Length: 127
Image 1: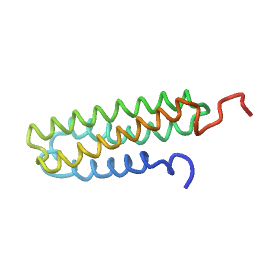
Image 2 (image 1 turned 90 degrees about the vertical axis):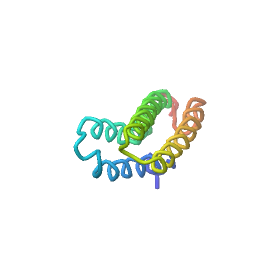
Image 3 (image 1 turned 45 degrees about the vertical axis):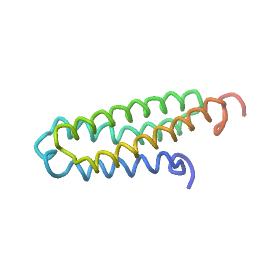
């Protein structure tokens, strides 16, 4: 597996997005189109920005998209907390998803640090 599909943080982020879609297909989410749409968008945006960043020409461009993914993850965590507080998801589900988000945040932070040092891709003009 090469490219963005080979990144563990992308793989786990995509799995989380699928999980978010499944959770929001039922229960109280069924009628709340606004929150359902927002939580799905942020869930999908996380791995999408990682993929887009990884396909960019330079580490600098990649890191910019990785930071956007980090923002999407923060949005998702906020929306999950709201969903929990208004009773759309139970505490166990919230804790499990929140832990996944925290783990993904750490992994993404490591990737940002790695790429910020110029690792993983050739910089434009370097051959």
